[in-house]
Image (cartoon, rainbow, N blue to C red; front, side):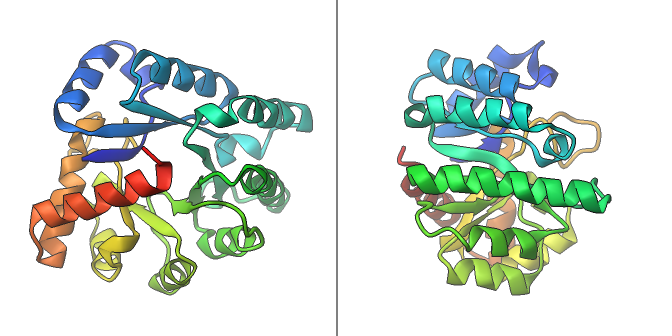
Length: 252
């Protein structure tokens, strides 16, 4: 199994990070740790260096933060990512979040910053991991302006099936998180999306099926199980196809 999106660098894991990584190593082939801030990116690189050939880093800047950041802070992260571009498997997570950010000026700011990260991924022909809530169509239209990004992943996808079909038509991917275990919306959505376009993730420490429990990478099996159930195929097939998708995209 591969968890294609988690945040082991978050302080939620400060008390048990090593134990969580040990459990992950027993069950997973590898995982992608996604940075969301300048310091988070530093911590993500450190985790990868400490766990070579298992924890792979992607560096990004969370859109909720970006809505309030000035240009110097954004440029600092852009330069940071450029500096480590050969050490990372993707840029992200980056994107837009209209669920939490309602102000029109801040939303426009998010989209402008997202375009700058898209441009960076395009320049270096890197995969990009997109965080998007309540703005999937806009994110799709933005990413569609760039033609040299090697792969596009809509992480924890929760948009419409109509937009999902456009995403697939462009050869992009969507990841199913452990949320699929309890979200009817996600179950209905991913039932219609072929496995060839799906990745699996936990978004740890968030989205554990049991309210109040902290998620971790080894729980990605929950997402794979539910995908197998709703598609009425065997677990092994789901695991093999989604794992191969991840290996191909991230070159791991």
